[in-house]
Length: 113
Length: 106
View 1: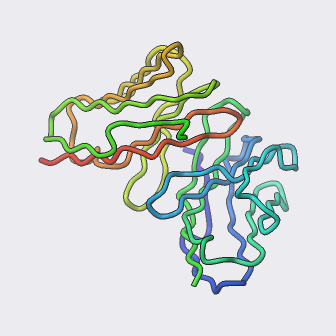
View 2: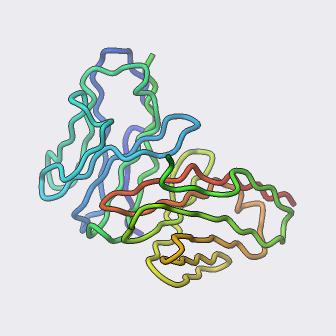
């Protein structure tokens, strides 16, 4: 069964460093998303991406964040200069359409020290 | 103000019991998702529904669009059902509830 895959599963980085989280969405899906979940809190929307551009983003998704689809398969989230409060589980999701079911990856746990 | 409210926050059950988790929302939506999150953190989609009722194995999900309310039922609960169950409503992205932590004991 097709699935969304995320790498790495866990990343530890020093404050101020850049990190890139990687996702391979399901191959025939057209809509891609990043969500995050701070420990003990609910999952929050970061950004959606369609047709090679950001379609919507939340207030959390500030200038420190960027997304890219560098080739036909990968979808990345970059955090330019990490802060302690960026520590969270980051989930990638994809869907075939804007209103169809979204499928989630297993998440990347980012720890900023 | 939370746009998606779930109840209860925590639920403990004995194996075999019938479980109900409730979700209320305050925004206009195109669909509602029920998701399962295990201790490792991964999220699995259980249902997406925009009207009526869906059933998959021992899981049943219902939605009442007029009342802005959905329920997730688990029949004949089993310890392996222990997880966090999350309701999320779909605008063009998902707005998540805080989840219901379910523990089923043998």
